Image (cartoon, rainbow, N blue to C red; front, side, top):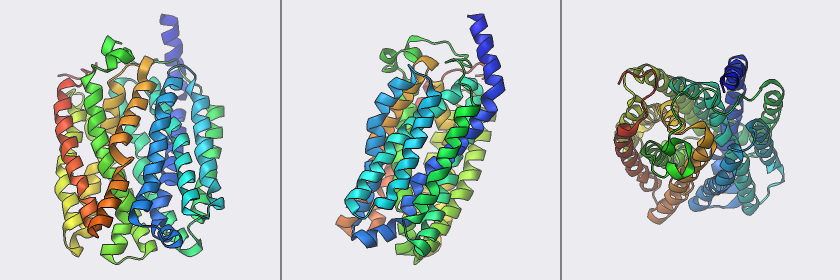
Length: 415
């Protein structure tokens, strides 16, 4: 056993940095691929004469396949090496993105976007589980903050490339550019990263509720993190899908300008918010083991008035409100995902992440864009549709405040 642990630590030390770098690069293009669509939505809507509900369904279809694929993916990740599974997932989503060249109807686009969810589901489950084997619990907030900083950066680049390239060269062109890098990075990951033994860096004991699927049912640290994340995902998924369109309708922006402004806000807030949230969590969790839950709970509560100002306020509040709201929402990237991976042991981590992904999308962004679109169509007001995200943020904050009571006591925490 000691020999196995020593081998695991040696492997971890040699390849942890390379694994983090390449997985972070892959995650960047994962989110670029995902957010090109919102950047070109007005152009797609015009070409296919689609209403808001149909546009929202494109994103919902992606997340439905994403969450349906998650359970099988998690089962595979707990039983087979994850490196080849990560590479396969990257190749699938890159190929589906490239196939946009053949899309000439709304129905075909709907199927294509749904297929991307299968490839992304594999990567989103295996990557954080693998990174957890490279780094111990107390460092995972910092590591996952780096890994998930690609969410805002990728979203911003997706918005920008979609809006600018789409307006000048047609909405299909940005999808071509987003496809190839994922293939090249996946190849580098295959050749340069060696997978460590499962659980090589775990320090917490594998208790019944942390190490078995039957015990997971009674794991409050996992479930409060999952439910809080689901409500956060509901809000963020809905807002990110319609924010460029919101700027076009209520800000008077062109499609290109809306992509630039939305992308700039997302990039700046995402970088600053993720870095600040990760830094604060890394320092605070050493003094208080509840810190990661509390950072997320407080930031979501504070985001509610900022989101309300953006959605319902006057024109002059549109950009400042969006800046403040997204900054607060991105504080959660590292801390909330660290809550998730620290709540379970390595033996079931992929399955637990798969269950989490299923739940957060089933309760969150698998239907929030569709719901927002339907409310918008029914009331003839996109403001009313986006207003439902405020309720989700309130529920998320309350659940995570409760969840802080069940946070695991990390080895280096003082309380």
